[in-house]
Image (cartoon, rainbow, N blue to C red; front, side):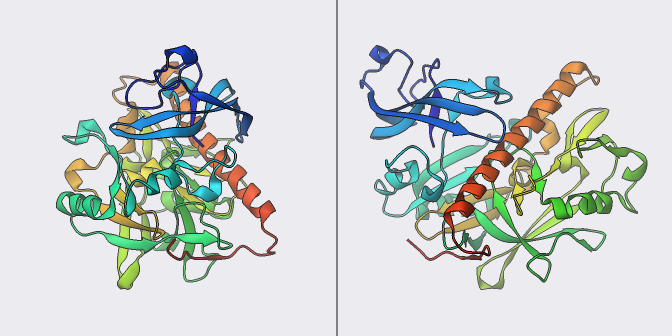
Length: 374
């Protein structure tokens, strides 16, 4: 869904809805519906409205979204004014109105969404979200990053719900991580709303152990907390974690995450950007710690993504999110807690969607299969 805090007056780049409807030049209309969105931690409640909705110069008339009058128990609320839902229609909440992706599809011959998360400290330009024609976005990505790898998205029981792909996870000491589908392959959701990488519970502690085995020195510099988080001295050297995504034409896309890519915080004490997925969520979620190494184009009607390697000069370690720190202070620990909480909220959102989807399905087993073009 799309929701905006009711006490936020959003400027030209965003929804024109405000808490005082008389301030909106386009006079938003109430749909008469009340919504409650419950996450694993916290909830949002508000009324449905329709108004002119703009992303930069791209505007949609009478777009439905939620004016959130209550935002309760969601951590780190000061970091955002609302949520822009670009999920697939199968996850849409907000009544019978078309999702944002469905509305955007009518504006383009072949809709695509391009996402690149970067840090201004390590790149001449920051990250971006681009919405447009597939060919134009592919041409720009090819010029910037080089050739990409096309990867089919998977459906869950024939439903298009997530950016879900096959992936092979391995620690570079030769340890394969989690292989429920055979041949060391598992499934993963790509999600920009998650800061960390969440790992199925069946694989999580085995992964932590593999990251800390020889030749890593982390066994002497790291500890697992009671909540299951791995905390290390920032100079600890973990083994590298490699993800391989099989693409079309026999191509493979690989991302290798080293210690510096996984450490959050610093300069003395760091948290490793991994956390267990909720027990009922049997997939990986590849969040910012992974996405900062790639640029992604979502080919919406074809149900495919194209992955590009970010150039080395533009890659951003997740630890740069919280720099510079001069010492480990209570404020630093609070920020670490906030980042962890954001990751937990995103994971719980997927858990809610997953459980809802499974309740809708009458199939006994979960089936993952490539989606057909729309």
